[in-house]
Each structure stands twice: as structure tokens, then as C-alpha cells.
Length: 213
Image 1 (cartoon, rainbow, N blue to C red):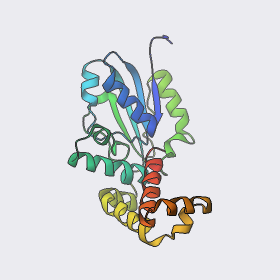
Image 2: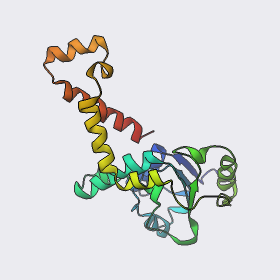
Image 3: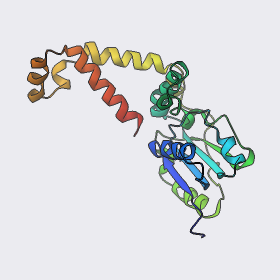
């Protein structure tokens, strides 16, 4: 294999890293790309990179129960349409809904694998990924499901509502003592912070961690 040819297989946050690199470094070229549980926005301009010869082949493996992408990454994509900040518009639900800007036969949407966020990284699909990188042959379409799970499908479309309910639960329902260590409670109280703000802070940290798993 030519040492100058680069292939890429990425899962979750790894897909975001490659998408960012392609946008930031004009000389970067990748031959074969495989995304799994991608958190990249569904309107990512793959057609531009194919046309410019910077990506030769692309495969997007999606899971039927990938609520991480559907709810969290999907919410960022929705928010990015309202607040046009780069860190919001780059994140999205391409790993569940697929990518809109196709480049023809070299762009394959493999959906849906049985399981959740990391399902395509397990079992026989690892062999198909290895074959894809080594030869470019894509054997992963056999036996895949046609649609995401109903819960994931609905929750991803109503991600703002799901997150809103989650925020209310963490702010007003979950006991403050459960969310903070005893040694930290006195610290927060001495600062005079309201317990609700601390709970919201915990929720935002949790949201950030889950959305980049």
C-alpha cells in the first residue's frame, strides 16, 4: 500500500475531527473514509470534497437506536440553524439521518445496523470495515434494517423537547445531594450559588460528555 495514501475509519467524535480537518486544511486528502455513529451535520459538503479530489470514497454506517446522535448531536444541528456559530453548525445527526450532499456511487449510506451508538464497531462489521479500507469493497449492506427504532426516530425529531424535559428533571426533581459530593456542597454553599444553577451545570457537563462519546 502506498505510504502517501491515507484512509480513515472514525467513530463518533472521531468523525467530527476528520470533518474539521478537511474544512481547515485545504491540502488534506483522504482516499477511503468510513464514518460510524457520526456527529457531523447532515448537510456537510461531501460533494465539494469529492469534486475537488480530496475524498475518493465515503461510507456512513448508521445504527437503528443511535439516540446519542439523534438527540444530542441533532439538537446542536437544530440550534445551529438558529445561532450560526461554527461550533454548532458543524455538529449534527448525519450518523442517524444520513448526509444530504451525496457524491454519487462512491458515497454509501449503510443503514441501519441493529444496536446503538457503537453497533457498527462490533461483530462481523469489523471485518467489512477492514476489507473496505484494504480494498475499497463494501460488503456491509446485507441484512441491514430499513428504518431506525421508533423511539429513536421520534426522540430525534423532538430532541429539543427531550432535552427540555431532561433539564427540568435535573434542575427541579433530582435531589441536590445526589449530584454533589459532600466535600463540594459546602464549597458551593459558601459561594452562595443556588442549587438549581449547580444542577444545570452538572446537566450541561453531562450533555457535553454524552454528545462526544
